[in-house]
Length: 409
Image (cartoon, rainbow, N blue to C red; front, side, top):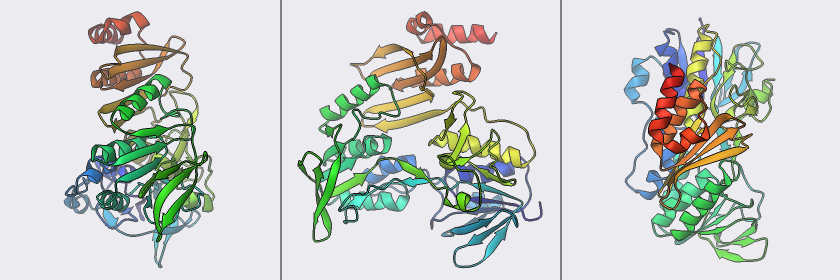
């Protein structure tokens, strides 16, 4: 390749794509574009250890020496303004351009904004980058009252972390339960109970009408019912929006993200998309999905590298995800959409249990709370296409392992 490969976005997906290209034997020019000014870093710790520890430093994905040693041209604080798919060229903000033989769009997503009166007041924050986390960490050291808008993973992770640090935290969720689009109702109930027992106030089926402030800084959140909740910091965690603007302006097919095929190829030859911004037909569920997880980002990055080098693999990774919320490690493998039957093992009261989801006789998902062995075994079972019956699941881990081994044999 004369012009080489350019990767737009230096998060988990972009960095893994660059590493995988070298691992797969690609020896040509390789450019990795970051719109941030520091080494690419792990994002999951930002909502937990980083914001609670004033001394915490970013956990970098790869040492600086890696990029130099692998001959990866890592460009900091660089923004791509336009893609010319015909000329195969990226036009950069401030001038300059990069030609490419293949481009990977790993542009990720950004926090969804709320059209609220008062949303621009100081102290109203969201979390997506290290700079966001630094702002949250700095302000949390000065305030006592925090309102978190949104009962999804990020919102609850931050709520639990700040509550543990002594803040008075209220979570406001518009739906009738926490994590409503992500987990089974029984897990939602359990998570709510644990968080409320830890001192967090949770309001479901509630919306915020406006934010009020004094001297330009937020002071309170006013609910649609008229309640005034004190808030010197408001965290907006109501989901994300995929960054598709570059792709859309270049004529790529868009549909809740950048549409890609099973090899991460977009509708325009020579351009691929991976990670939070990629929407594809999932082999496991049969439906169109856009998954926001480190596992999905890294696995798609590995496949995109192989696609560029001429391999014909299709994406077949089993999706899995985790979240640490207070004293709960939630781990999910598979996709629960379509579940019509569940089997619960473990002890809910002891904060250690798993829910096995079935569609008919087919195991499609396992959700675990503080049962990592179930999660790891679930990844093996779903990867092998093995569906144990309910009796085997209830018989315990040893029975499951034996049944899986017998199926493989």
